[in-house]
Image (cartoon, rainbow, N blue to C red; front, side):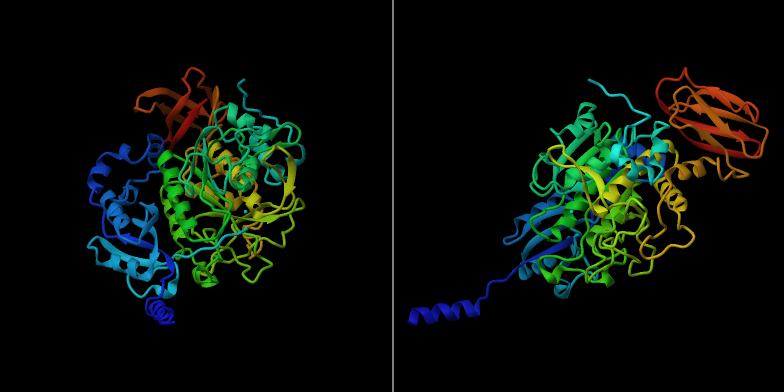
Length: 536
């Protein structure tokens, strides 16, 4: 009896502290000068080329987290390092609150931020919670047999881009999701596999390269972009390159998934990815103390949202599902759908009617969200065995749109990510009168291309070069001048073609140029335009 009492007193006096999730932020990056002087040590050439094409300079956010800092924190008793972020110069850690707060004594630790905001007595006043919504060689084909998938493509006039051979060729897309079982074996993905369009994979949850197991959500998402079964299913970007990243643990909801996402987005950036699709969203966690409120949906609070904001500054476009929570107690979009420059996509049915489940806007700070809409009711998808069926959710309206973002950017390689986003929004059918359900409405990707080329909206001062990419001939749109000189340079700045064009004869051959990337300049008096030309 005395022994029992002693034990009872012991457990009362020394309660077991619960494990908490938190982020620890560092003061600096001691290796910054070295990495900025040697950029290929941290970014691929493709990534550097994407930055250069958009006039984006390198900065300290590109520099990896200092390895010594990681090792010291990882060696602290009671602390487990779950993920890291160079963009936010931080680690996602797990441990009891006392051990986590003790890290503030390290000279290189700037602050600590708990996922449970009530514990944030010290360090920065920022927040970081989230919530999740749920869920032989082939040639490029100008005419696809879409079958039942025709509706979800034609609604956005994506088929008109495909007919011009804008099928995502040369654009790289990363899909951040919950797993991709069957993608390496099922028939709808064989065109993708046999054309070597899957450039790489990584599982950030289990720390492995195998993503062809776990949850099937990513498989279904990928099928709307890259799947192909003649007469049954055609994805919106069947010829794009893909990276498949698992960041979502479908078995639980925890803010570490936000950190996995940021880590994957950083890898995508370093590999030269152009477009990131995220058919995930976060609002409510298993631990209610970690969950969001609508006040947090402000484009600044969530760790994943801050990561998405930085991804845009690196030159990428993030396309994100709005969420499926409109009929719940939390009807608004989650994170990272609230990020400032992510293209947030809601759902409609095949008749372009708002889907009752599609999460609504605006963001807490009053911005238009969702941005655009696409089919998310009875979307045509492939399952893990290759079975073609239908499914509902903004999880599918997002990748359907993301694939066409890639096709449009292929057609307009000289445009920046910001320009592409604005072109898409302006093409939408409610652009002049957005609302909380539809945002700017349903985009028209053919109209977006026409507007960007100056064919429909003929600017009095801007030239346009099209098609781009081009095979054998290019055309020059001359808005308010009789003639112009077109100069084409190779990637080391050598002039390879110079041609005078006229209103009545505005095209010329580039058939003699080797395939590759070139720069062009169009001059007429004091008016000029420069850009990048892709010769296929």
